[in-house]
Length: 513
Image (cartoon, rainbow, N blue to C red; front, side):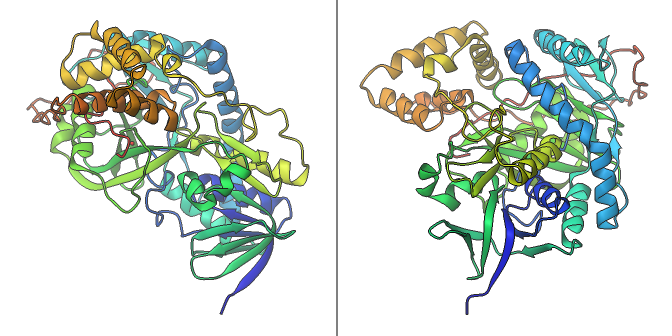
C-alpha cells in the first residue's frame, strides 16, 4: 500500500544545507517534510565527512581575481554573522547544549606559497579582521618534515564539530510540531500535476507545493533527464577522503592548515575536543561517476598521511586511525553555490557549496526561506540557480594559476622540474586539437567537466594512452624520534617548527576527493 503525507515544502537531503533550510522554513511558519536518512547514514554525504572549518578567508588563493575573492568573502562573512544567533536558536529548539566554536586558524606555507598567505591576509584585513604573519613560526608544537617559511594566524576563523552540529540540527527539526521526517530516500520528483509529488524508496510519497533539492551530488540522479527541462546546471563531485585519528601527539589547540593548491584543498588538522580525536584531511578528486557504497582507498589514505607528515607533523604516521571517511563535495563549473528556483518555481536548489557548505548553511537557508515566502527575492543574487554560467574551454582552464597548480602537482607526484608545467599545458592543448585517441578522450573529459580540477586526470589519461606507467604513491615517512616543542600562544612570534604544503593526490582520476 502506498502511504502519503502533505506539506508546504519537502526538503530532499539531510546534510547541513538541507537541515538548515528545513529549520529556516519551519521558523517562517511553514509545514515541512524532510526526506532522507539521518545525517551520517547517507553514503558519501559531504556534510558528515566535513572538517567544518568556517573558512572566512583561508580559502582565498593568489590565483583568484580580486573581485572574485571579494564576492566570496562578502558572502562568507554574511553567513558567519548569522552563526551566534543561529547556534543559540538551534540549542533552544533542540534541547541540546549550544554547539561551541573552536577559535582560530593557523595557515602555514612554504616559500613558494607566501603569495597565498599574502592574499589571505589581505582578504582578512580588507574585512577589518586580524591577520598576524609570523616567520618560521612553531604552530601548536607541530613537527613537520619540511619547515614552513611563514605562518598566518587568523583568530576570527573558527571551526565547529560537524557531528554535534548535525545532531543538534536534526533534533531541532524533529522536535518542531510542523515537521515530519521520512527516512527513506527520494527516488523521483513528479511535476505532472499542480502539486509536486516526491516518491520515496519505500513507496511512500509526499505531496507539496514546493520542494527544495539539497541532496548534493544525488540531485542529478534523482532528476535524470528532467534536470535538463529544469535548467539545472551540471553538479560535479569532488571526492574527499579524511581521517579521524586518536592521538595526543600532536595536541593541537587550533585548526592548522595549508593554502589551497594543486587542485586540492589544503592539508588540515582540526581539533575535536569533545571526542579527543583530531580530524585530518583531505583529498579532492574530481569524480564523474561517484561510487557511494565504497570506502576510502588505501592510496587515498596514504596520500593524506604522507602530505600531513610532510607539511604538518611527521609523527602523524604513528597515530591510531579511528575512522576513514569519504564525502563528495558538490560544485558547479563556476564554483559558486546553486540557490533558488529552477526553471519550474516549484523546484528550488540549495546545493553546490563545494568546500564551504558548513559555513554557508545558515545563509543559504535564509535565502531559500526568503524566496519561498517572497518569490523573486533572489532574482539578482550571484548564487541564483538560473544565472548565466559560460562553459570554459581547455585554454581557459590552463590559465597561469592553473599551470602553476599543474607544475606543483606534477612536481609532487613525479618529481618533475617546475618549468615543465608550461610544457605540459602546451602538450595538452596540442593533443586536444588532434583527431587522435588522446585528443578525442581529452575533448570528452573536458566536455563533461570543464573545470580546473580535471587537469590532473587529463595528465593521467595522457600517460595511460601513451603507455607510460602511472605514478605510484611514495611511502609514508616513519615518525622521527624528537621531543615535542611547546605550543605557541596565538599572536606571538616563536621559533621555527611548522610547515605547509598541499594535498597532491598521487593518482587523480575521473572516477576516484
